Image (cartoon, rainbow, N blue to C red; front, side, top):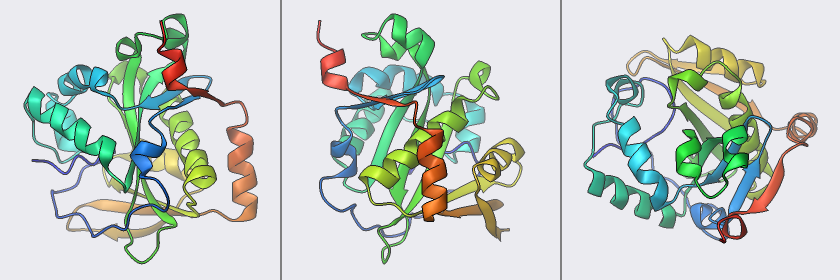
Length: 230
């Protein structure tokens, strides 16, 4: 089974590093009732209702290649979603099209465009988070959805999870993703020729934190449970 890292990046499968759980409640459980509504993108918790669409995405050979993944059965996808929901070291949101979702908030599986993840990569430093973004729908790429979703996740990590440093690992050929992270003030710090990936990093100084919160000041936080009520 794949490790299910979710960047649009290429890298050979490998054993993930040991991770230390996020402080306080499990990260996935912490955001299970959280909706972050932005201008283009809206982030909602990953639930069983999203699995069929997610499963269809991951049949794509392109996404399998870019995420170093192997196809799973639908039942395995449901098992993966359940395990993620209980995972103490991972925070996952599904990315929706805000405009479509606002018109029908009870049918977000019809508005899915990708997902964004944040998890720890350094067993000695719980303030370091690795961030990954996947815009699975080709028609939504290059339109600012990935950028806004990434900014919202970074802001959430800083405000709610105590993250002060971010890393992104991206396939060397994925120039669009590398360019996007550099526009978000990430700096290239390493190149892995074996996995053919670039590591970019951002240390969140007070100045960077102010900029990040300013960039996401329009984001509205809502209760997912309340929005799903009939």
